[in-house]
Length: 126
Image (cartoon, rainbow, N blue to C red; front, side, top):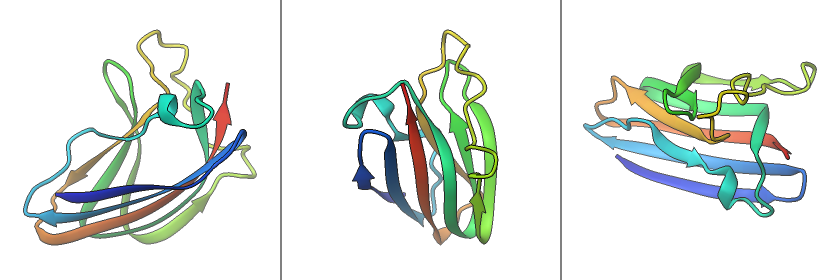
C-alpha cells in the first residue's frame, strides 16, 4: 500500500490533515495516521469536527488507538460528515489508561488500484 499523510494546518487549537492510499493488492492494518504527540503543539487527543472522504474498491476503518484499538467509523464510497453541531466526535475511551489519543486506519477488501483520500478537520484537546 502506497500512502501519504500531510498536515495542511497545525495550530494551537486546530489541525487539518489529508491522507491518501493506493493499494498494490494489499491492505493497511492499524496504521498510525494521527499521532497527537507529533502535533505542534502536542496535545492529549483530538476531536473530529469534519471528515471528507473518497474510498474506492474497499472499506476504510478508523480506530481510536489503545492497547485494544476501538473502531469508531467505517467509510466506503464518497461523502462527508460534519460533527460541529455535536461539538465534535470525541474519543469516549480516553479514560482508559491504555488510550493514546491517536487515530489509526485499516483497510478491508482492497485490490490492486483500490484507493482512499481522507481529509480530517480536528480540534486539539489538552
